[in-house]
Length: 372
Image (cartoon, rainbow, N blue to C red; front, side, top):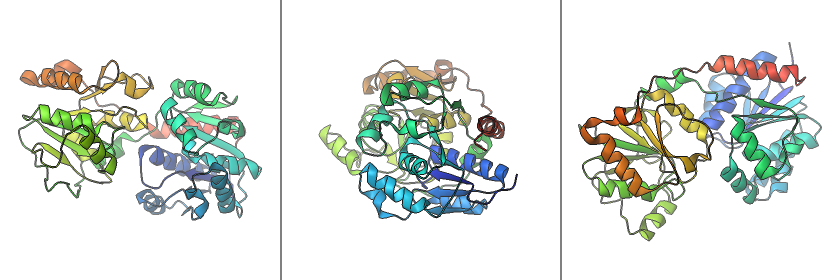
């Protein structure tokens, strides 16, 4: 089928390269290849934009200043301004965080597909922040979801789900993640301490250092377990400083605590660790966690952090309830006693995911519903 590059527009809410954005780019790349044309628009610049260009995907970054006002109507008008010179048949928005683009596309008379990963807590946060609106699903001709839990969250938080819902499952490329896990990574390393691998057990957490992600829980674990090393992978924030100060906990002089600072590839550090601990009080994108299951790294999390998003494979040990530093300390002590980590968590066979087959099923499901 031959079409011009404007017959399909895919919008990715961020160019920074998180799991949801990377999946969105894979979907857009597959659709534009299948339709022989299309355009990707990024809500912000970042490494993913360079990746898209390197893959030969026609793309651009949104420039309108209306996106920064914090008012949903302004964001919709900004999106319309960005889209006004295009005439696609279909617009795909990769996340509820790209709701303004979906509404703009519908106002311009196009078919609209919204891909939803967000669960209750994230949907409510996006609503309160003015990033989406209560009736965003009403403008969609089709909704793509990652699991039945997402559909339930849409009904609870937005009150409406359209007739056309396609469950795409979790789409990611295990071979790509394995490849990135073997790359050498340069990190800025905070507090003047660089982690050097040793015989000591290494415990990691990945994400922006803040209260929501449980930076206080992680640092308190480091204080309580000086025989192990603790590595936080990700950006340090003022919220982290305030959170630790309020709890009278200091990270800067804790000899067994390390922080990479902002990095683009966390996988080498996660792959080398002895245990990944999900300390987050709320998990923004459970898709990130699904990616980690291919690294053969033991992981522990709390059920309340996941919003019951999915049944995790054997790589995870799930503690019931909300994150608790005392329970994590107890778990780590038990798991590492006489090196029993695998006995506690169980075997973790490397999982294989056929991303291309999943993309093909998604494309065919939309084709049968007359989207193209």
